[in-house]
Image (cartoon, rainbow, N blue to C red):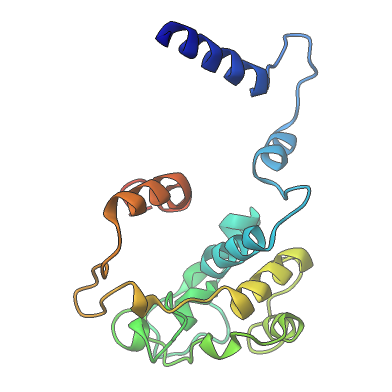
Length: 199
């Protein structure tokens, strides 16, 4: 019985797996990237929010565009960073969305800049306009309009209260189910952060 089950499983996997025949035309790198990581045919809001969150973190890697050169013109002089990292939304506004009132209120990431938590529930169109305008100045060449829409949607509807999950003093998780978290992390988060969480 076990052999039959394993055989059916293998046959099922072969039926749904793409098979590349020797006589198929070779696809270019862009085709493979878009096919594997591009936009779904019918994108869900959850997908758009997840992509928006990744754009908030490090937009040029997500969008596969050139890393920005130089330090962002609006990055404060008292800040301790320079170069491309100053163009990351999270670098000024914090990974917890609270800016100077949150985890980046002190230390090497301090800028004194306000967080983006006030953008929660705001109109994504207005958020997008703020990202394009001064002092942010993100051009369509940097963040195309469709990606900007996902970032704005994330800022409007995707923010969460990190304090509900992370103890600020110990920097450890509050409660939760370690086994469930491990499964989710390995399946979803590790693609960007690595299995050790250090990428």
